[in-house]
Image (cartoon, rainbow over all chains, first blue to last red; front, side, top):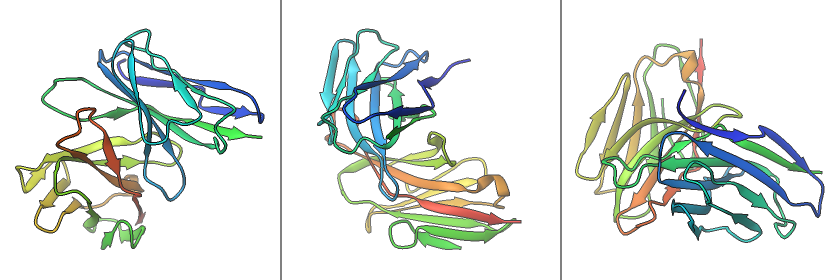
Length: 114
Length: 114
């Protein structure tokens, strides 16, 4: 069963804590992306990675960190420096160099700061 | 029914009617567009895409129209069904964007009345 998985589905964090959101894909896609979704706003890019061991900041990278040690995994850490972390987080992936530029999304993780 | 995503974020249609959802994009250099469907609490689902060298593309019950002159994109859903109720948003990719970054609309909420 191929696709993108994100875990956990719901996550609660106390202020001052770091939390890590998991994103795994078995589509053999090279590129992976993290977006944040807030009510009434379009998706905003946090970080993206086009190849293993390389990643780039998106439009709202402050307070977040990522790693890309394996092709299939792109975890996102929400640090205590992120002042307003409550949001719906979406991971996406895409095959580089393919005839399509389509990004496919995972089911999302809803993070709530208590 | 017809809507413009940013100015009329909700659209209600009778089951069996056709739906038209509109999106105004911002950059004349955008060369690739996607329509996504997002149900509550879930990740976005790819519906249909179109490249800037095309004006129209059809899928199963859906058609995307692209008017580059006025930078306008529309999604037409034929014979709308209750399962079509969701938020629909467009995404544009700019030609110079080597990171395959997309810019996303805020979405239109479609409600199908049985």
